[in-house]
Length: 253
Length: 309
Image (cartoon, rainbow over all chains, first blue to last red; front, side):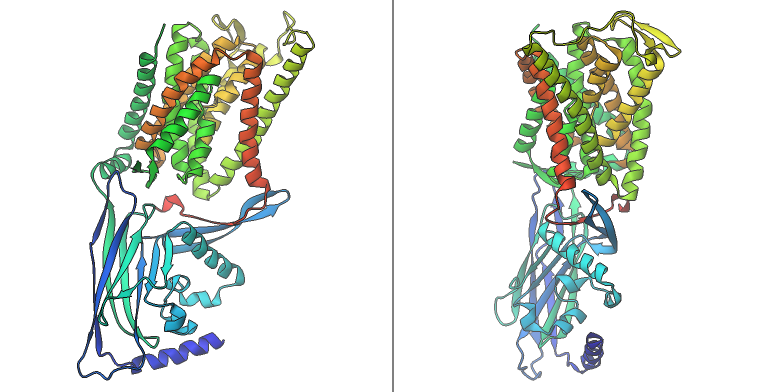
């Protein structure tokens, strides 16, 4: 209930924030191409904070939060529970439309930038980025599964938070490296850059990049989907040919 | 050196896959089994999605059994008539198995089905083989013949079912029905677990039908070759999870390893051969049992249901 109250207050305060800063952000590249020697990639987000000359200088320093969201899929979280002597997956929760890749970078720890309520409302941080308003009514189990989802995706390297991942190169120019691991799925990624001062969002900008298969990788993957019979037969023939070839090469009698 | 797998969608170290498939190929050549039952769990352990691992290993098993079939065919240790019946039953089983596989995948229980089947199958078959191998060893040690002599003229009842056929090369006169049923069951298991089923078929043909071991291995390899060929194409058509790059890597390592394994097999006596194979199968079963029985350090898991693609 206190959280709800906090939200209402925060919502009331938002329009009061003056918008005298503008934000420009760009990616070092808008495309990651997967080739046969692909082992992940790194992009950089560059940005510039433009201040209106007439704006009053603020007491609070400017902060940047960058959130990168990968393609959305349904994610299924299961919990192993003991059933008699064995441990099997029993309870499960579906999180439809969740990003398979999530990356958050800020210039200093979120806790220093804003209060937890504001972080939750502004969707800053791994736990908050995908929290829907409905999550406030989650039962304890669903909340536990939601936390586990983030923890496991972090351990797989697909979710990542860098509390000092954004570097200010001058007091207006900043950059942030974004590591895209090789296991990150193909598709479109959205990059949200938000400028904060004292926990209040002053400006935001969205940009995109995509991860696609190219060359042989792309041809093989599309062949598997478009001509499955042909693809299956070619694989089998290759297998039989290699089997036959080795018996010819190694034949001694 | 890393190579990106287009269907599994992750990069993998080429040398590691070659080494792994070479080692498994060695074991497969040594024991006359496909080696899929070792390879599939290894691939899953390397983070390859279970569906891709199972479907791709089917292709690998087809290729490596091709080598064996050619060798046994040249030595005339291959009963084509028996093999034909095994193949017919096996194909029916494979179709049922792929359908079951896809249903379980939709229901999200594939992982559980695979783990449970590995545990039960391997513990039971490995346990039986271990028991039998140890008993034979003890008999040898006691100075008796390793095997109980079979009494002439007695047949188990299932051999006398209708549709009896004579299998000249196997020295068998038996009903077609139990053989076809056995082949169906093995085709089913093979398609679901991505294994050739040689480790079940070989002992079953020896114990239930009393076919000479030399013919059994050649004939079972023939059956595995045909069913796994079918399974590969079916997996490719129904769920697009065959990774051709991974299959090629596994095959190169596997067929080379199998050649050396086949040579090593000639220097191994029959009893220790059976004991080693039994120990191998039991340990794979135990490995899965541990996973099932020990409290997991991380009880949660996240999966992306693949039907969402």
